Amino acid sequence: MKTKKEIEEKLEILTRAELKEGLSRLTDKNHILFKRMYSHENLDLPINTIVDNMNANKLDWAIQQVHRTLVK
Image (cartoon, one colour):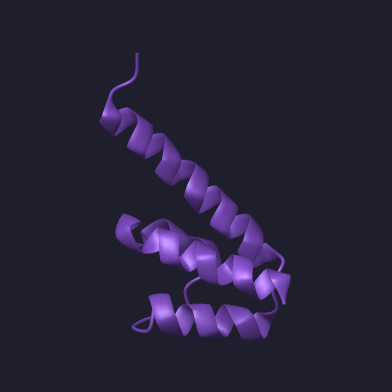
């Protein structure tokens, strides 16, 4: 049986992958906005690097924002 920490790590990996997939379907304009929100110190980073560097506690909100944008 997996530990709570192992499950949380797996969920984080899956969430990052889903976030990257959602972002890949958005426009460059959306990417710029995302970069301003989550990597304002370095807007030149690739979007996937920003997702990889994000604090885990910001992933839930970020994925909600991406999903809402995709639904529009």
